[in-house]
Image: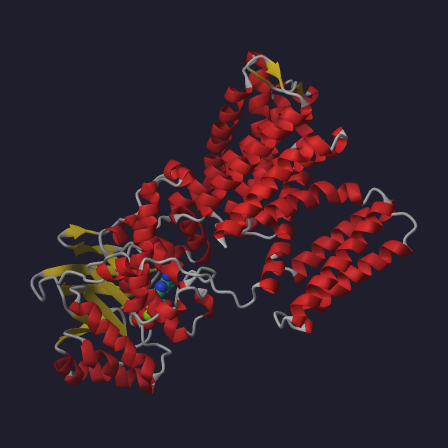
Length: 639
Ligand code: ADP
Ligand code: MG
């Protein structure tokens, strides 16, 4: 499999290198060059849009910055390309940090608006700063020269092709590393990312900065390719086109980015001429129909699933022969195609094909079994000696509501501490205060003698407090193994350069993390589901996966928020066994439960909350007989 991939890659690169030899028409050469340049930008844009799930309409602006850094440095200082390209990358990356700032505060349509404004401001600045940019007149840039030799069109094509392949490799490596997993995790659940020690704040900035660096490189290459740059290239339409390329090609895919780039460059040209339009519409219809027929025959897809794409492409082909001229219909056809893809192919073209071909695929897991078992032994800590966590007079106020009112809590090392109470009594709020999601209005939380108040969730996770969530917060599109690997983010120390170079240090970290993740999955009995996407797991298994992921933090304290909610009786028995095993490994637990009976079996101490106040505490049996507790529960049931 791997050697096949390498062979294919080598063949693809050889074909690309041969293009200038075969294609003598400079117009076509330039088209392919433009596709490659756009692809570099789209690789980066996909990090932000596909992986972290943020919208950016500012990438045409970043592209423009890249072009103008190269243009201005050449025009005013006659600097060579090996200076202008790195400068374009660095300066665009710096602007990427600026673009990340709004993404830290707003999401969705608001973020779209702000990033759009960013792009517009960049365009206006380029237009107005005539002393630097020559304004609307634009700047002429000749083909670059290296060591006194001016590159020919073919040589420049090779340069772009080489940089595109390099960009492809670097982006791919980033996205397949712990950094890429962090980007994906923060899209699926920002709260869980933070609580797994993966700072959402920091990783959003990383994603925008890296993405902007690629946009800068693409922009600079574009300047040399066009040999002339002017402000109105970098407009609103271009930024929309970039986003469309990602949506149509397919997010989270380098093939998708290449396909998307080809579509946005070639489609407008194809729609210029009726003959080529007919040919292509017919070709697409045949390929799609044949592909779908094969998929149905192999049982990989149902007739219903492929009906719409087949009908759509066949109709388009028929329509093309009915038309006399295409010019009046260009925008309509383009619009219809976009609507079609957005409605019927939410994962883009590449995603659709991938689902067809590999509908029941399971990735082979490369995990060092021996390493996994060697790491399973966790040292036993002293049990019941000393206080690990102490909450002092915690007050948590939401407007007029005191969700927690003067609550004191002491959790002894190595014990299971139950926290019970009726619905709405403040149990989850307590957990959110302990993990830094809420900052208490008053009071203090001490962990191992140090105050946690004011620390960010990611920092609290780093000192050894892990948790699960009442409403399961898994990273849905990632596999079970990858979910646990996000929890192991803290075991990586390799930086961006190490990731891009795939140093042996990174490889070792990755190998160890995978083995550890597999051992944790085995610990909760999920090893056979390691390659399954988290969102496809049954509910009970999802809860167990959350525990495995939390354990990946190597916590001293594990907080479980209603882990038994919604589970069947056999699932609950399995859960209780796992909870005891966790305790036996020396990890302290706080167990929130709504049901008294579940708590009674495993807890050493139980605290009872009612309307934000602690009304009882003690051994399970004592608490169970407490008059106030019976009243709170019966009162709650009666009301
Ligand atoms: P429990 O987990 O014990 O069922 P919670 O801690 O979720 O209860 O909620 C306690 C009270 O605090 C409830 O009345 C709830 O509505 C309120 N509450 C919790 N979080 C917030 C919030 N972010 N804003 C306003 N009120 C909240
Ligand atoms: Mg709750």
